[in-house]
Length: 341
Image (cartoon, rainbow, N blue to C red; front, side, top):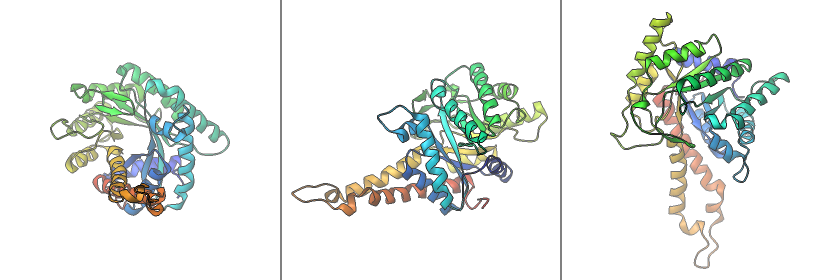
């Protein structure tokens, strides 16, 4: 199916919230990883989200140039074409854009979508993330309010990060400490600045001990119950229905199934998945190389085995391995078998 329209994307998120499940949002950095995600979502009968970071967009554009907006547009163009061949619906999202990257990443992409809409088309990306976790909350929300006006005009959705996710993601790094927990006051400030959908739809990545990457047990203390407390506090203050915020789960690698399930019960409708799928892809490549060492290399006067070192050979195996991890994610999040198609 084609990439989701704005209305289809909104309906996807509504279905997740009403149905008590979340969509996996998988970071991609190549045509192979895009194909992996589409394969995995199809095998799971789940819709989902393809997303690209500033670093991923740099990689799409080419290692020797600095043109990340161009790289993101190339990623989107490829995804828009190949997604037509799959019976599921996917949305495109840009992930983790810090302040110093806005002018070279999110703003040009917003402008590109605006131009396409003027020509009678749909926005190129369905949502964009502004990562203001490295600046004071007041400045974070001031910038978010500015971007929200632009995404609303394009019929797109904004994602904001309120709080700090520990670890490192494409150059955005934070320590693992008490700042990893968003407070109710932080959430109230967010609603005061951005509204509750009346000024444009947004998703909020509230932090409850999240850490990017994978850490040994005991290093990270997740508190998904904090999300329920914040949702309840907002509902009481503003007189809304339960769970007024659309929430995003960042830094979930290594989380237990129960921690994930509790976060989803408390309003998470999108969960970012990067580290685990990266590992699944690369682990397959390593396995193929190590088991077929003499086929990959021209050693001892031999010529190697083209059927082994052909990138399509080991690439297909890696895509299948990554697709399997995507299927696992849909089961953890409850989106398995829940495609609107």
